[in-house]
Structures are given as C-alpha cells and as structure tokens.
Image (cartoon, rainbow, N blue to C red; front, side):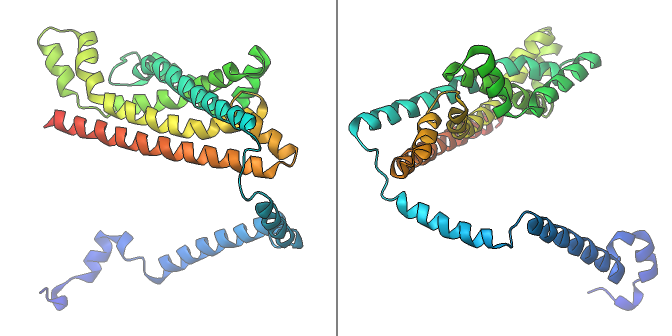
Length: 285
C-alpha cells in the first residue's frame, strides 16, 4: 500500500493536469451536455414533435398497421411478379457492388501512400473518390435514369458509381495498414515492386476487401428496394405501387419478403466474413 502522506499531490497535479480537473471540469462537461440537450429539445419542438400532430400520427400509424395485417400477395400472378422483382433487386445490388469493387481496386492502389510514390497522383485520386462519395446514391440513380432511362440498368450504374468512392477509400486504408514485410521480401529477392504488390500485398488484404464487399452487398440489397421507387428497377416499384393504390396487405407482404431476404443475406455474408477472417489468421500463423 502506498503511503498517501508521502505522495506529492502538487507535483502530481502539475505533471498530470488533465486528471485533476476537479469541479471546474465537471461543471464544464455539465454545461456542454445541458446545452446540447436544450438544443435537441428546441429542434424537436420546432419540427413539431411535441404537438398534437404527433399523437394523431401515432394513432393513424396504428390504424395503418392493422390494415396491413395479415400480409398477402393478392394472387398467384402477383406473387410471381413480386418474386421476380425481388430477384431483380438482388441482381441489381450484386452486379453494382461487384462492378464497383473491381474498379475500386486499382483506384485504391493509386490512393494508397505505401504503393503510389507520386504524391500528386495520390492526392488527385483521393479527392476524386471524395467527390464521387459526396453524392448520394439516390442522386446517382436519378442521374443515370436521365442518361439510360428507367430500369434495372440505371440501378446497377447508380450502385457502381456510388460504391466506387466508398470502396476506393476503404481499400486504400486497408492497403496502407497491411504488413509490408511480404512486399519487402519479394522486392529484396529481385521480384520488383509490381510483383511485390501482386503476390505480397494483395493476398494480405484480400480477406479485408472481400469482407467489405460482402457488407456493402448486404446493405445495397436494402437500398435497391428504395431505388425501385424512383424507377431504377427492382421490387421497390411494386412496393410504391401497392402503397399508392392502398393495397396495404400486399405492401406488407412485399416488406416481409424484403426483410426475410435481407436476413438470409446477412446470415450468409456473416458466415463468409468469419471464414475469410479465419483463413487470414491461419495464413499469418
């Protein structure tokens, strides 16, 4: 046990001022927290959270929920239409994600500082990826619908364009965080820098890149349902039509189909991610 009488508190306070803020520091934290809470309440009041519309809306939401039960497709022909729309949604998300991932690999290499020695190339690549990533996927969908017309092809292009920016950033960060020893070993034996990247760097980061692609595919399946509302193909078109015509039981059936599909894809992608991470750990050992 330490003898507290021998501890020089003044010296400790001088050496570690951040740990001895005392009441003044706690008061500052309380003021900041109180100000943030007040700002939140004022914002909610301005948006009408505390008005009668909120209570009325909750009552209407319950009425709509009752009208949506039990979920039913309406007919066998409608079920086949919804099933085809769901398959189209998965195809849009899959193709868009894969196209973006393939195109983002060279961009990620150009944006990685430990691969590209020309700083101007790295800077321009990173800023280009930032520009692409700053535009929301719904905006890209509307742009591509205006270019190629309505349909799933516009949805694929929207996903491919939007995900290139995100994949490029994530891939470059994974490449920069990779172990340099395999690359250095290949280069030291006369393999050259290109072969070092091909056989030393890419196998090292491939499980991480594949895990990110799987996660984006799972997320894009949900987004593909939304893109269908604006005309980019998929089951979203049938969902918006069912809501517009007040076929609420059919709308709930479509929502249930989307939930089951997303849950199944999430289960499979999680298993694949764990398998890739496990193989990566075995390769390192």
